[in-house]
Length: 397
Image (cartoon, rainbow, N blue to C red; front, side, top):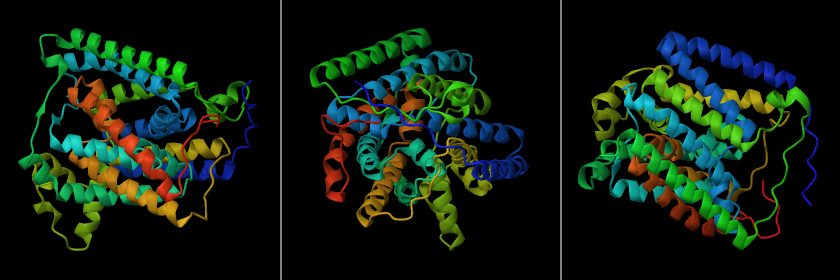
């Protein structure tokens, strides 16, 4: 018999109003700095934040639950998200409406993805999870975000070594004889196989029950309640495809962290423009522009704004004032690992994995497999920092 769902708390109207005002002011700043297309990306980012919060859609806990107790429901939602994204991306990419995230498979990807997997479990969130958790008031994740920025800067500093000395080659399934129809078919078969593996794992390990979210009845659930994972999966895939259609590039997150940290160092007199990472024409142009003109930055800020408004509407926005020192240390170290790993692997669970797989990049699947290896290692390290893992008989969220 499942656990009874708790009643949802009342909406925090003052926080909703403040968040809405801040989001509107930020939108004006984005429009002034980046123009209409960048403003649309900011709005899409707000949509991502709302969907991520309401569906509680993440990667960190999903992979931890699969590894520790065999609960694969969230991973199956990931496969639904990837399947819908591939179906939507295929005609856009085939028509030349943008370029996908097809990155090299080299030493940087191997080391970076494993480090990211470890960092997720120590930091308590992934790239997208960090942003919507910060927006919803989870104060400890601020430490993760700070570590993320710091690790991204170090990764940008070391970029020449990983790309120049240990290069790899990008491989797209669609560039083979398969074309986009064949690449789509192969991708869907892989996803179906992963779904089957998770179901078999559940039958063997009998995972614990899943705690139900707070109850909000009626139409108010759309604004205040928790959404089913499958709704979040479909909406995230649709928003990623919309991002591709608007900006001609898929959704990404962590390049903004390298930009924020590098601009901060530049403000202290460090000539980051000489780094190999910022010497490429595309990156140099990004570094020279205001942050509010950067597509990834404005989408990241939109995620935070959307999650803030959504969490306040749900009555669950709260700032935690007391954070154990070991928890703060784990969050910072996890953020450092993820930031550094993301730069080595050319992306995170969004840019390299979600958008990579949706772009039919073989590197996307390689990133997922390697990050799972890192997840296993990260789960074993969590008790050192006083962090718990799910156990048989526990209810998981």
